[in-house]
Length: 574
Image (cartoon, rainbow, N blue to C red; front, side, top):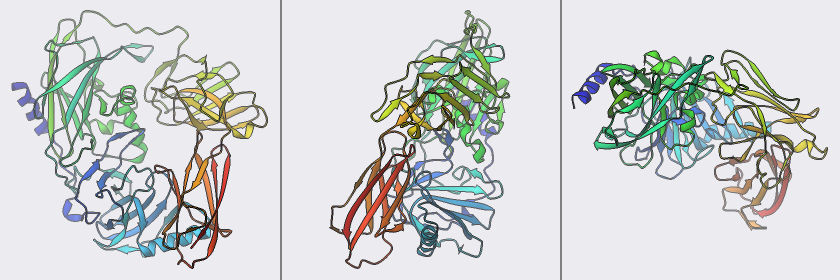
């Protein structure tokens, strides 16, 4: 108990004052909802931090979205992925508010955007507006909630950014949004990783994992009573999760702090970030473990290229050094953005055995500060630019057997291994793989990677002069493939259907491998805009003219990333 009280006292002294903005400056961004949440700021997502909060809209679309402060609508976007339909408000107080996954914009904005789409014959949109085009006062309706873009259910994604820098803000921690939350984070599991350096590369021993149980609310202990055995140099990894009142969703934590013998040596804190740092969540997490976990798996250490901004406290990069027989007390505390805390305490004891790093003599070193080019004979090449890696690593390029191909995919090369699938990449690497491809398959040829599940995933590229070249942020074995199947498209209405009372014209569309890249819809030979909802697998045209009970012909063309195209034609009445 004495150690727990010590940890709590140290934490209280370390709490940072919240931002200058207060909740009085803003009103709630959506009306007529229960004010429940499905995601918070800074959660660790695949290759990015979550940039805002997700507000539940009671399972339905169409909730009014309102301006949170005085300003103007400065941008409107429509895209198949990401935020789908989104609005950006530049506010007089120096912030930008972002509303994502809308079903539609306010009528005047919707009509303007529709006009631009028709004139430019584009399904997407990215329009910017001057301050005097769409001025707003607090509480003005700007649009309606929805489920567009990369959304798995109706909700509002809401952000506040500093306008000059576009730095995203933790609006719950700042008090702009105040969820009901008295539930402390959950500490799920502990891991210890011993390291040794070889040629300037931190080589890791296999992680040792420890079970964790809750003694009382907010207080955890290990399932073992003996001290954790530690080596000469190593660090801890903690799996954590958080909950909020009234929902079953899991959330990310705000801060993770660690002490050794009462002295703080590590702190991770998520107060905000700029877009160029979003992908660095893969350096904050223990990436190989994060890939297979439903929790946040946070490394209590800072690797070479992890940004310092996330670590207010950092001694010896978070490394713990122990001599054989030495005993220390570790206290780890997780805190959510509403101030709830949980602690885990345990002893460590230095082991007598010594871990010595060993690697194959043919392995080569890749370093973050250097551009490196790897080759496998004359067939394959991978260029890893400066800054693409977060830390130095050993690699051993080799040729491997290609995996089994999905239906409609032709394997055209062996698998070329350069980087493990557990290697996080901050920026793109450049790949080029040679292969003898029959001329009829050349327009459909691209590169794929074998992912961590052993399956092929498309990464793109173009076949020219006997090789496929592309850039990618995905790591895995490279394979030359050809995608020969066109997208599957089906009308979601019967032939000759009466759609005079319908608001939309709907189709289902999916692809076997390379993914849908483009689509075009005409009605009676005239191009019309069509929205894609990838999570639902649908393409939707929203009728924008009154029904005249006339026979119409709709023709939809859908093309995948390899150029395979499907056409469908269907008659309806409206």
